[in-house]
Length: 226
Image 1 (cartoon, rainbow, N blue to C red):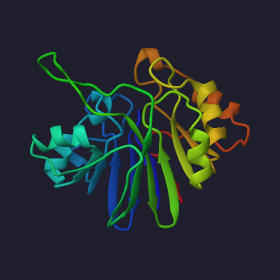
Image 2: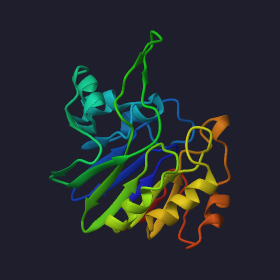
Image 3: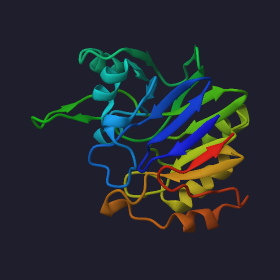
Image 4: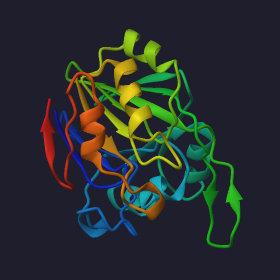
């Protein structure tokens, strides 16, 4: 399994001949190395409905005939845009041809802002567990710290966790370090920082706060093999 980070919360997973893209916010993301015209994806997984996570989903899904996996409410909305979707909800899991996906809770908002200044209800925000090739990857989405992360860590042996550290909208470095301790992940990568002024952070500060010294900062386009 090959994983790569592409700025903000964009994560690519290549497994079993499939390319999975989490939260493909590319257009307007000055930190990404990706170009919408060049991205190939078989599956898109969305943690929640905020525009900086839904991003270029509709264009990418239509171009690649990609399956979009997200909460049931957002999946319904995207299906009305002509996108193939699979709706899920928190606590649910489903076995796909590339592996199993399970949604966990996240504490955040999830409204989708339209061009005509409307906010569309986007369902419950979620974290996502991906099980493939005998490995477990956790993308926490946007969330604050919550104590049930301990339970997620106890129930699932997490090989790699992507955790937001930007503060203001999500956990900051200190809370994210505690989340890493709760989750007991073997490796931790910070996401959701430095894209906008309110979430400017030094990711190395977060790495230094990790008790297990198991963190790694990925530059956009940098890969990890599991």
